[in-house]
Amino acid sequence: MQSNVALKPIAAARLHVGIIMDGNGRWATRRGLSRLRGHEAGVEAIRRIVEAAPDQGVGTLTLYAFSSDNWRRPKAEVTALMGLLRFYLANEIAALVRNGVRLTVIGRRDRLPDGIAAAITRAEAETADGATLHLRIAIDYSARDAILNAAARAAGAGPLDREAFADLITGEPGLRDVDLIIRTSGEKRLSDFLLWEGAYAELHFTERMWPEFEADDLADALASFHRRERRFGGLTASAPAEVPTF
Image (cartoon, rainbow, N blue to C red):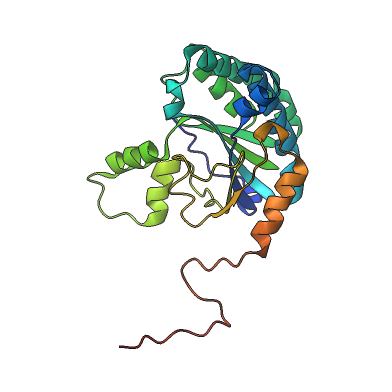
């Protein structure tokens, strides 16, 4: 279930960055710590980046917290992750409201442990007026499932343009396409994250583990993004067209 409230204009006009927050477990293991401690450190990194993002020109920040495939992880780890989600929803909302951050959660809610879906709904309602940053957290999320579900809803509706179909996928009319996807920990794949919204996203891969990710790392990724030339399949005004030869 996803929000169907249109984006605040301030956030919609600025960059949309998606982050695959990878490496919590490896960060902890290399330090002789439990994987849970790695996930706790990952939550601390979320706080840092949410605070830093607006000043770096980010209006929408989508964080990949728990994929639909992550249910395959050991039960103890899944339970710990759900506990951290409960903690975040109970303890971070006041700070989000104070800082003008609007929270929405994307992905399935019917498989979450008792009480979490209701806590998400409350958090979304309490932060609904935030206009400084739109924070989207992907939980029990699969981009392929989101596209399949949208196709099922569109069946029989007649022709749709891309914008209308995108609204069915995201549940958020006016959501800006993703400009930049960052993945931490050195892995170089999208892992079923924002496949439609990120069709023309620039990609940035870093060896930095997510618990180590700082505001400066976000700034470096954005600096790299701004150096790139985004053509969306076309040519720049100064680029001569190539004439095919036969």
